[in-house]
Length: 79
Image 1: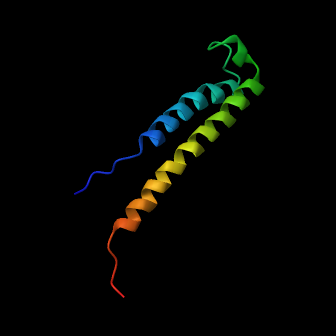
Image 2: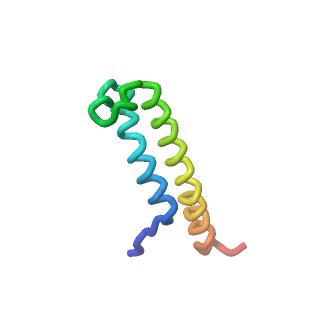
């Protein structure tokens, strides 16, 4: 059984995306004021949510590149 290793950039960017998205979602839902006064505005939360989507999307690029690289290394039938 082989262990699957994820690219470090995928892990870091996804973690940052989740850390950015959670306060953003709380702010959009109207519960951002206890976290920070700037998060009282739902538009600030929307900016955080958009940033989180961009971070996670940026992390998916190295993930799929590594996945395609692994798929290209498996030997196929000879023609």
